[in-house]
Length: 134
Ligand SMILES: O=C(CO)COP(=O)(O)O
Image (tube, rainbow, N blue to C red; front, side):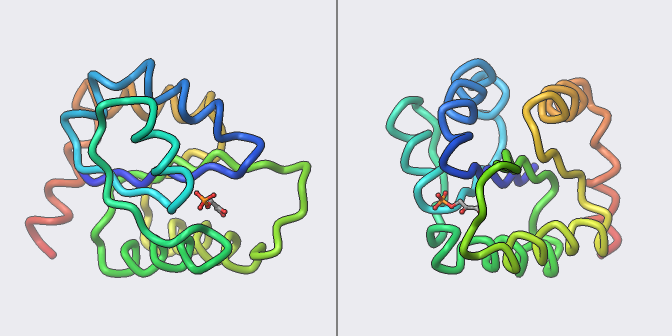
């Protein structure tokens, strides 16, 4: 599966710890991330990640474009709801596209745990059918 990893600055430590904890699962999948998030994760794990632009510089929009092309199966976006983001419209657009295309999305670590366990136990294999009949 193709997974996108995104974290706002105040959530980056949480994301790094999450990827360390689940590295054994993440390593079986193809990973994408916004610039700084990807850099942090690759600095602290052995995971290989395709890095896009940093979020405020268009990274969220690049992830959104991938969703629109059906190129992502799962989005883990650890949002910071307590800090204003200069690129808030891009964030909103990304979340909206997940709903437009029915892509599994976690916006906090608790939901990410559940989705990742689901992925590991095969509950997301329906995504293979989506790709097959694309
Ligand atoms: O801003 C972000 C998501 O909106 C994340 O971007 P970075 O991973 O480059 O910090």
